[in-house]
Amino acid sequence: MSRRSEDSGVVLVNVLVVLAIAGGLMVLLITGQERALDRIADAADVAVAEQIALGAESSVIDALRRDLDTAPEADHLNEPWALGVIQREARLPTGRFSVAIEDLQAKFDINQLADLSAGTQAFGTRLMVALDQPPQTVNQIIRILQAAGPVAALEDLTDYGVSAETVAALGPYATALPVPGTVNLNSVDPFLLSVMMQNTGQTTQLLRMRDARGELTREMLQRVGALRPQNSGFTSNVYRVDILAEAGRARVVLETTLARRNAAGVKAVQIVRRRLRPGQVPEAAN
Image (cartoon, rainbow, N blue to C red; front, side, top):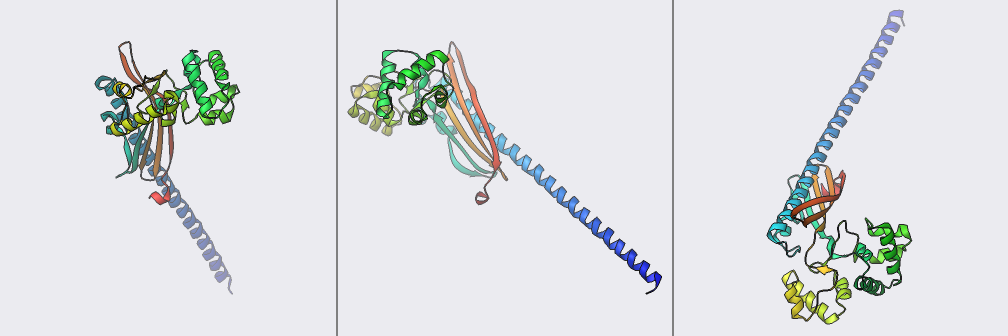
């Protein structure tokens, strides 16, 4: 083979190497550009989903505020304000969407035990007995609340020595409200209502009436010959809102605790806690 042929072969190899490197760089550039575009698209989807969720949250806040003017004497989730904002899971052009509302005053506010009255202490003891928990735990909780003040969450009691088993047993029926509040008879759990009423017959009748009408009233209590239990009422000012919003490949779950104020001429709805959890739509939901 001549020297010229060898040089031509080397040049060809070099050209092929350069072309391969250039092709590889082009692939990397295109791939990087595609990934950058995907990241931009995903960020845009997240932004849209967040705006949908925050818009739904604002609708709930507005509805709760209006309810203070239109129907302040009673609260339940069959009222127009609630029916207007609660949304079972539906599919929008952007993806799935839902709004769920929980009345946190359907449970007993454990912080009420700081107000040491015979009735409150007796109820706490009855609740412990009904849950098969040590009744002396009520005195322990009273001492904790009087020394440390109200707790932000029921689970915080374990930090002061209350057993995790007792806190777990209380969980379905007790909570720690951010503002003082009584148990709402319109939403209270049947078991908790029975502990409050101490009368199985009256409890059964009241639950039947509530199921039929969607609420309880003072007249209904009178009809069955019952007195309104201590630490109970017909209104609520603390709610938890759970919102699911999807847009494209993005999913956002917004969990908000709202507290209303209706005193001294001030009517307002305050965001006590908010947790925004972004994520991706599961493949099966696409």
